[in-house]
Length: 117
Picture 1: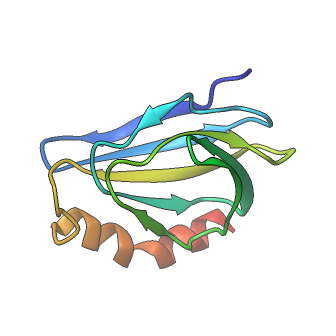
Picture 2 (picture 1 turned 90 degrees about the horizontal axis):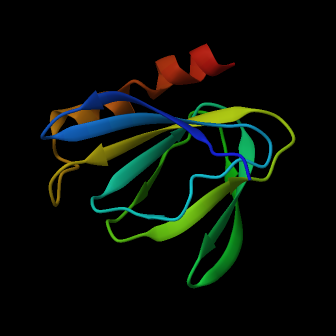
């Protein structure tokens, strides 16, 4: 299976911002999220998520973020026939969504949405 490409843009003691780019059929590999995180889709696409709880399909909609709590453990696969990407914003300490980086990213979605179209 093809590995999704992770490009880290920011990594400090408060936040990590990673772009995940998926070719058709690519996967992240099994991983566990140690911190709360937000996903911001850069394209509208579909993923297949495999975890100990089973397998689900998830629709990503460009510019529509979603939040997950720390502890999620899964492997994410592309379920589309085209390349797509999303940004993953991880807080680096518990209960971190009050940090300015998260507010900045969420407030900037209109810019991300216009760039992705």
